[in-house]
Image (spheres, protein in one colour):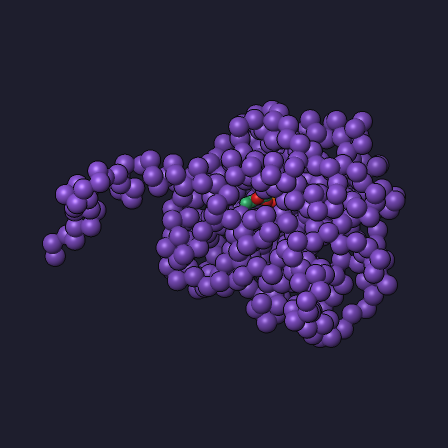
Length: 431
Ligand SMILES: *Cc1c(COP(=O)(O)O)cnc(C)c1O
């Protein structure tokens, strides 16, 4: 049986933590914690076959795109109650317009919006809530830009654990808030940014005995890292040149990097794809740090972008994400809200819907190809993080209220009126 330990990621510290407690910060230096394993020796070929065979199984643990790869998550054993909603197993779809528009590159989409609550957060949450339940936790909490809360509420509900959620006042989409309420979470609207809500939660968590499920909880990262095993399996274990993700709190980028590193160490892949993180221009502290060549984060005090899922000025996982860019020779790009909207529209022409934050990936690829940082015709996987219906206010603002789009019409109920209205939009211009 592989063994597990928790360790501080700071090179100058690296202290092993007391494995009996799930810490979010190193007891010695306050640094980020990661889960590490002394893996039993694997035969990658055999394990690939086992993983593949599990796809035919009807067992819940095998149907989950996270737990199907449970050899990579050896913190559970046969007696652990797995809290799963059959997450993962998301499609990898090709694109026509989008790859051409963004490059040309060979662009495929890993659509994490096809998860039980509509975002990639479910991958981390199944791992984290399973861990919490095994620990006898009675109440979980998170601060959220929306999707973490939807996911936490669902998985906590399933586990019979109470869920407490801090969200910035009027800063998250109605759909996400509704999901959390629907699953029975207690919602506290506090502060005007995610960062503010998160900081308050961190301060109050110890005295209330709250178990935090934000991505500073290293077990979130463990669940989320399985996306790379699934993606590589779907590609017959041929790594792409680039994997592109949006960057908010930078947990996803950290998880994908950790997953790749482990698969490389364990002999599943030779080549490691380069990780590209894309931030919104109004909320790009990581990008600022990297372009300034600074060793410290350049926090953004009042982050602003319509892509609310990545409206974060002080990402908690920046040190893990920086390490990932170093390991994979990756980089970071920053895109405007206009560029995000354009990318989202092009994806829509391919029949692919997503939330605005997710479309930042495609906008980033286009910019990087134009700048010569991504080669034309490169093999690129963009991770679309959330479902189209997560933020319908955004769509209505852009597609329906805008006059020039002429997509949404209103007509009096008569044939004449209908003809007049339709004439203006359906008229074919003379050749
Ligand atoms: C959470 C989230 C992100 C940002 O992920 P991080 O791990 O915080 O960087 C991006 N897009 C969507 C849709 C999300 O829900």
